[in-house]
Length: 264
Image (cartoon, rainbow, N blue to C red; front, side, top):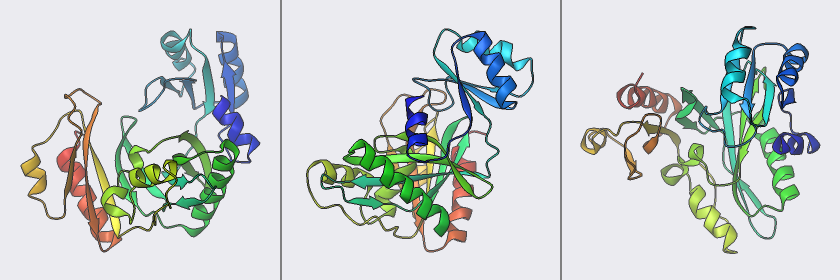
């Protein structure tokens, strides 16, 4: 709720929403905003957790039974064409470096694939303007990510992550300076590094089950990242990235990787 109010104060578009603390609040929110909509917790929701999609009137009962007792929001469903995210770093002096927009694809509410750069000059300008307003308003130092829905050619802010972010892991191999290095540079008072993409980059998350490293590394151009976590359904265990010279080659390789690595 505080995040959405901050976005609104800074002129960053968000989906219409209403606070929900009682069943009566939920009924009034549905009447005002319509369906479909998302009922979500105001804290500790991520990777699709703490959310319920309401398409029919009967969905409200099940959603309320699951999520009641916690502060909630009801949000109009955004009929988006894609999700994109912008990552930027701000140093102590207020200098900001923006990375190119990245396009994100999810599976069961969990980020599965990120492709960068997502080239759209107008959306890049608007996202950078929003990021500048947000980071300056917070006096933020370090790396921050904002995720957006693209709805009929406009950006609708979904949420921010005041940290390095999964959708920016492509920068390790795919940008002149990774998001991790720029985060450290910013807080250490060092000059920020260039955020230019080195090519066309895809990152595929390894979710739930870890494939054999040798099977992945047998593919050309693959970079392997293992987080050392135990396997568990829905858990991000690592990721792989690849950098190509063309968007077509990247997208083809990303599709092949996803079929091989992500359970359908």
